[in-house]
Image (cartoon, rainbow, N blue to C red; front, side, top):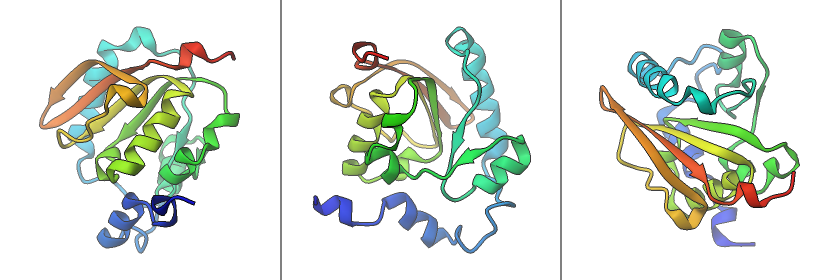
Length: 167
């Protein structure tokens, strides 16, 4: 087993440090939600021709809040689950949205996670408060657009490998 697979995911460490696990997942609200919501609406309005699939979600910590607020089921998958292949049995997704999360991953986790996503999704939207993450072409993604609004970056990536997969 690779050394990085034995370590706890950097996001889990960050959440532990911030005390998110001690908070109720059902009541968690992102403190950046207003500007994040605005930035996502602007970006998704611009890219709406790419969006046609029903909404599905995954979050190992705040799934209860999502389910309560949106009224839909939320998977409990972590980045480690994604890197380990949990999506391999799932259908190809039109779009995966990672909101204020990927910038927390260590580089080795980021590479494995986004490479796995590139095999199971046509498009990837990454919302981040930083310039990170830097998603390289070698992971199977090509950046095609970016919106910057109120210090929130929303990037759109196109998978370079999903069209090669028979589904």
